[in-house]
Image 1 (cartoon, rainbow, N blue to C red):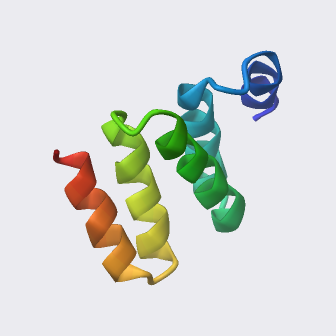
Image 2 (cartoon, one colour):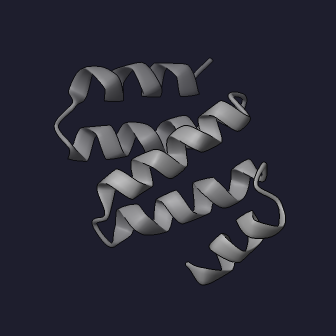
Image 3 (cartoon, rainbow, N blue to C red):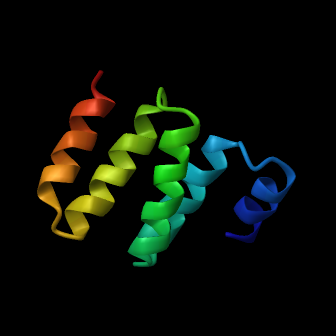
Length: 77
């Protein structure tokens, strides 16, 4: 995860680094920070479907199914 954080220090607008770090945080169960990273990725580049899919997965793990469904639908656009 340090590599992703370092990449973000060098380029805070690098949406793909937020996605990668958010994915890693999800795997280790740190859902709130994962959600924050994935939401930032969506904000920076709403065209990245992977950010919506991963954020939807975090919402699903948090039992926030309506938000998960919305993100999954956005990913398919």
